[in-house]
Image (cartoon, rainbow, N blue to C red; front, side):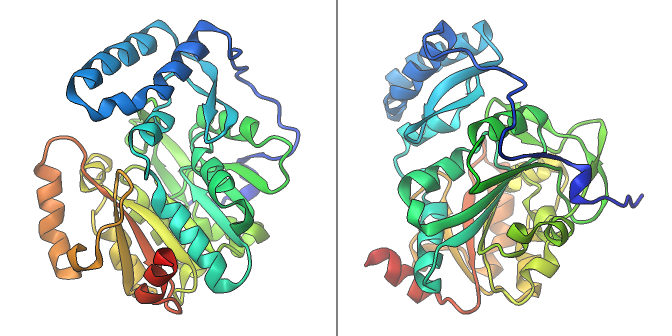
Length: 332
């Protein structure tokens, strides 16, 4: 059933938002344990240390819950106990490289700092990464997340920073009810719940937000719902004038009951023809090894049948930017 919604129907957080889940101090045992494990997460590159590290990580998650203060990309931030992304960043030095690459490249190619919209922002760590690695490249940012707890952390972490607007909203392909978000692990939530929630589209939010409407780099990471979010942004993306970064996980798509090729099909219909692939751990896939359009159905089936969740981060370049220009900038 269609529901008429606007950006004002959703929870917003900008300057002066008070945290509803106060974090433990950095000296609390939960925060100390969390920070120590994040600092030593590089040990997970090796088999035996990984087993030991994982045992301590599981113990910490059983012992505590709630909010802690932890170090995230050079700054203190509020997060839930066991928020895994900072540990991944220690284990994989190039983790989330795709977003840094495309933001730097778009700023250079446009000759100005750019606007970034982060859908599935969680606690805001990927935006923190941009402000650490390329602060000169970002003029404004919008962080969007539908999970109430993540939104509280997101709002708190950017409280008093006018450059960042935070918005709590569940996004989809149209205004209607969608399955609610469920925490699949401590670092992410996916739309696989049994309950229904009101959802809107990025196009609708853009009608009420000048910042979203002027986006240069759109990042979508919603655990299998990325294609639906992209499908709800056709007005915003028409003509392939903006860069889009999305996670491609056929395994997560199956869990969320969405079509694995949906994002590619929608983007192709809007004029996007150039894609740059990155592995989920960060490294860019060489262009001559990147999957071709005709190979996607078979690759999707292969990834779905494998244990775990092997997936990719994909950059869809605007039509005015060639893959060669993009790669030349990154290699310069």
